[in-house]
Image 1 (cartoon, one colour):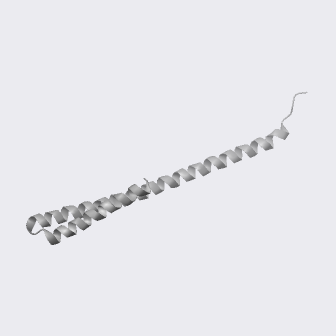
Image 2 (tube, helix red, strand yellow):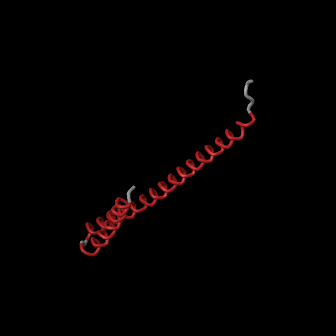
Image 3 (cartoon, helix red, strand yellow):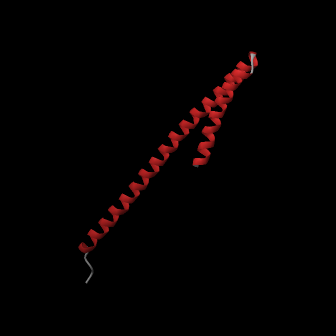
Length: 93
């Protein structure tokens, strides 16, 4: 997720909450209450989902970093083993 998309997503969730609060003030009666509940719930729910997405993406980045580190260590270990084994090999005469 790009930083721009992240800002837009969180911004739209905040805009929904603000729009819900504005509906509570401007629109009266049952329609105002329903709009307030729907808009604020959608904004807060969207923000919560985005937070969970951020946590999941962070865990994925950490796992990928750990896997890359394991691959690098395995390559270094293989290179060391090859260097150590070469002098001990006997050559046919």
